[in-house]
Length: 234
Ligand SMILES: [Zn+2]
Image 1 (cartoon, rainbow, N blue to C red):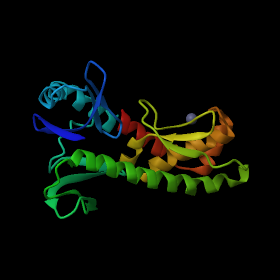
Image 2: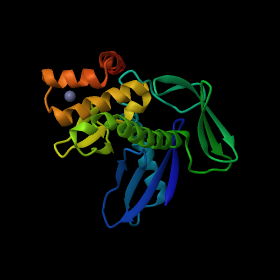
Image 3: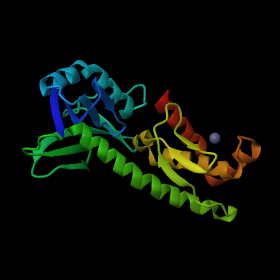
């Protein structure tokens, strides 16, 4: 069952589950959903009170999952804030409308929340939008960039979008390509750079001379995009 409470100006929507446990547990997931597991007979008032009490922790968890970029200011998801997409800064506009929608228009990132929608928040809509855009875009760019590696007769790595504290991308020993979802906030060329860099690791596991020669061949201006990424995460 979905419930919601107010914590300051923030709405916390949570999913409530009842079990035989004796204490209440709160979990915040990377998709920003909040799960509360409560004892069978705890009253809803007590549960809501406990969620509000943990409000600052929940908001901190959200911020943790929302951005690993150190200079990202605290988000309230209100009109006028700026949010990044593919290296561009967009001005957030939140308004009511007939249907839920997230779209870019000029320099605006518009979030439309359906009138009478009860448990929909701009925060969750934007998180879902970023996620679906990342999934489509990263997959497409992996496919496109992999074409340059066809001669090496490797299989195209599977893609997994994974939050990593200090890395934009990584190639696992099982040849799975991990990409940080935060990349969706950086220019397309930065995304290509990370993908190409990791694909070069299919051929050369270490950062030796041969590795850099290949990377140079695959993306002659790689240095520029690497510097750009570093300036973002500095
Ligand atoms: Zn590397």
